[in-house]
Picture 1 (tube, rainbow, N blue to C red):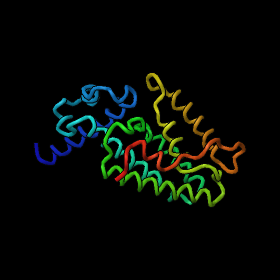
Picture 2: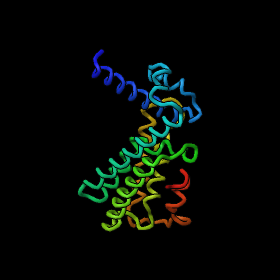
Picture 3: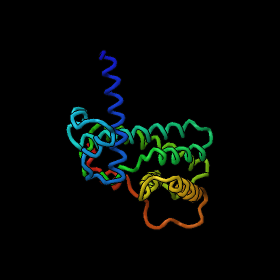
Picture 4: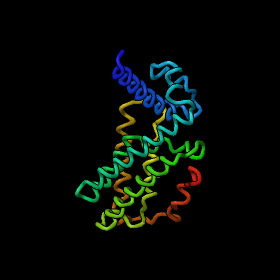
Length: 208
């Protein structure tokens, strides 16, 4: 096999591993054995360990990909001319990506410098998206960026049981209800203080 052919095969195997790992971890829990991931991806354990020496490395990679996709979604939202539609596009896209499905792993793995960097860049982009919606008067004033981030986390969790079209339909209905709840002016005051950036980051550990 040529060098290019081997590289293409390695890339396919890595993509299959990452997709399988995301599904296994989010449906079976983060204690699921890596053998289940290799089996679902259709690769041998040797292929898995050549790419990811430990389960932690695999989880770190998955988290980084989720953060990168979140940044892409926020940038796409900012590119939309309408402040509300841009924010809704970001929320819907992030939920579709299941970008918050890995949140339960917070505090159980080491956060790399690259993860911190991408997370902060994504957070800054999302903050600009939220600020623009506030300035336009379309997002209720007591909703913060972290409220929206935590909302995305809630909707990113897979429904119990095997995948079914009904799950997607129900999720889209509830997401539409939640998005309407974000619109200004809001009729019910939000209880308690808004989540702080320090609390949000502390779930993952101490930033460098």
